[in-house]
Figure 1 (cartoon, rainbow, N blue to C red):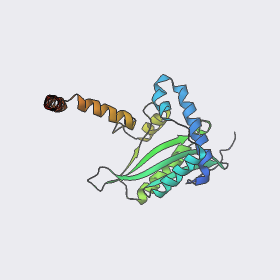
Figure 2 (cartoon, rainbow, N blue to C red; figure 1 turned 180 degrees about the vertical axis):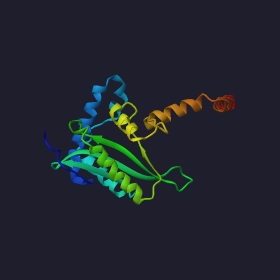
Figure 3 (cartoon, rainbow, N blue to C red; figure 1 turned 135 degrees about the horizontal axis):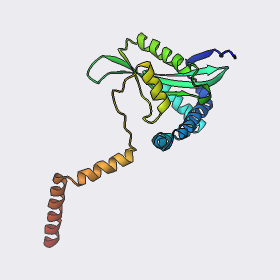
Figure 4 (cartoon, helix red, strand yellow; figure 1 turned 180 degrees about the horizontal axis):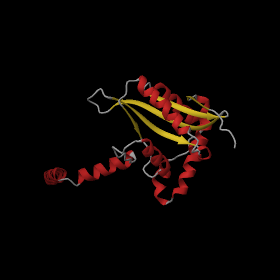
Length: 199
């Protein structure tokens, strides 16, 4: 029986960009095996350039409430997770740690690597006096959701997404169909007709 290699967990570095792109791509490819219901998650994945990934890593490094951890086996990045410090709601000081983007290379799953990452996140949460650790995962990502449920994470919220342009268009259409907007348009048409008759 082969011995497991030790796992090193550390904060991300800018030079990890290309390895992280490969990790995300491998995890996105693995989702295709989960069938058509995984389409939504696939639609959200867009492979960045290395320059963009480096810029994003630097951007997140400046965000003091965010930590980005990577796990390495034999010097290769095989997993990652982010941890964001927040309050449970905007009007209390009950602090929470939000874990997102928990990614484990498919070839390295079931080796306790995710557990190692979550242990580091939990230690960080304790240092920050957090009451809860929340985890965000894609709705149709069966494996991560099963894993988090086994650990005792309960579903407490639903996270939904929409492109900004589409949201603005839908809100504009909704406003255009409202009674108040209809009255306003009627008044404007009436004023235009009167101005045309006078002028």
